[in-house]
Length: 511
Ligand code: MSP
Image (cartoon, rainbow, N blue to C red):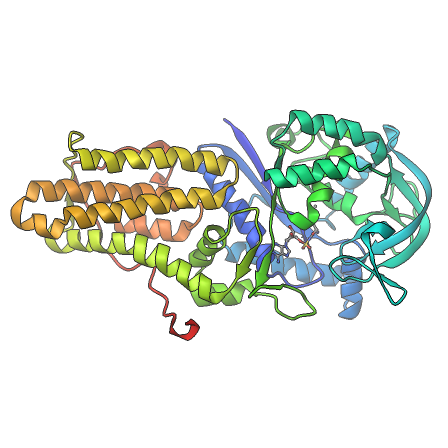
C-alpha cells in the first residue's frame, strides 16, 4: 500500500491560535483526506513548539510557571484540531520525553558525524522569529535595529555550538537541481536556490543565556537552539531514533506544509541537518502565503487577529474550510474579509451546489416518490458529455491535489456543478414530467450521479457536508472513495428527504 506522510509546522504556544494556524492545519487535513480517498496509508502530524525564549517570555509575562503555561496553551491548539474536524494521527509536544530523546539523538548523530563544533557567537537575534540576523537584513532607527517586519532585535554574545552549514551549500544545490519538485510553488523554489547561492554561513545551534530548551547532551550550560529541536518533531513522531521502527520505515521522508515565513528553516537548514545525520531530506515542502485582515497584516500589536472559533461559529466550519481554500490560490497571500467570505459561500455553495441538490432531490421527493429510476443511455450526447466531463474533471482534480493545488482542484468541481445546473435548466425535468417520463428519469439519474460524484470530490474540503449529502442520497458514507467514483447507482434507488445543506447567508449588513 502506498504511504503518505503529511505535517503542519508545530505551533508556538506563546499565544492563542488564530486563523493563520487554522489555515495550515486545514490545508494538511485536505491533503490527508485526499490521499486517503486514493486508498493510501496516510500519517498526519501536527503539534506544538514549546521551547525557546519566545514561549518562556510569554509565560513570564503571564506570571505562570513555564511548564504549566505551555501545557495549558498547547491544549488550545489540540482542541482546535478537533474543532476543525481534522483527522490527525498524532499531536506532538516538544516538551515530551520521546521528543527530547529524539532531539538529543539527532544532536549526537551530528556530533559523531563531525558536523558540530563549539565556538563563540556574537550577533543579532529576534526572539519573535527565533532567528539570527546579519546587519544587512536589518533596518536602523535611533540606534536600534529592527527586522523588516518591525521587530526589534537584541545583541547576543555567548558561547555556542555551530552546525557546519557552509559545508552543505553545494550538496543542497545538487539535491535541488535533481529534485525540482522538492519545493513548491516554483517561485519559492527559486527563492531558496538564490538564498543558498548567496552563500551559507555556519549556524549557531545552542544558547547559554536561558534554560528553557532541550539540554545539549554532555554540556549542561547549553540548551539547543529552538529550531533544531522543533524540526526534529517530524522524526520523533514516527519513531526516531529507531530508524528501523515500522512507522519510520513506512513514512519517512514526508511532505511539510509551511508558511512562507518559515520556508528557509525547512528548505535549507532542515535538509542539511538530515543529510548530515545520514537521513533522507523531506520529499516535498509546500510553502503557503499569509492571510491579512481587511488588507492589514494580522498582528498582536494591532489586535486584529481573527479567532477561528468566532468565524466558524458564525458561518459554519465547512463554509470556512471552503472559503479559505477556494478564495485564494494556495501559495499566495489572501485577504480575509466577511464580505468576500459571504460572497464566495453564497455563490459556490448555496447558489450553485446547494441549489442543484435542492432542486433535483426535492423534485424526486415530490414527483417520483423519492425513487430515482436509473436508465442511463450512453448514446444520448448531452448525458454522455456531462458524465464524461466529470471523468475529465476528476483526472484534473487528482493532478492538482497531488501537487497541493487545492484551489485549482476546487475550481474543477465547481465547473462541473455549473455544467450540471446548465444541463438541468436545459433539459428541465419539470417540463419532461408532462411529456416524457422516461427521459425525465434519465435526466434525474444523470443529475443525481453528478451530485454524488461532486460530493466525493468535495469531501476532503467539506467532509461534514459531504456526509450529509450522502445521507440525502441514501448512500453510506463509507462509499465516499475514489474507487467507487464512476460506478452508477442501482436501477431503482430511493433517496431520503432533502434539506438545505448550505443555507444562504444574509449579506445585507456587508453591502
Ligand atoms: N514554531 C514555528 C514552526 C516550527 S515547525 C518545525 C512557527 N510557529 S508559528 O506558530 O509562529 O507559525 C506556525 C505557522 O502558522 C507557520 O506556517 C506560519 O506561516 C503560519 N501562520 C501564522 N500566521 C499566519 C497568517 N496570518 N496567515 C497564514 N499563515 C500564517 O513558526
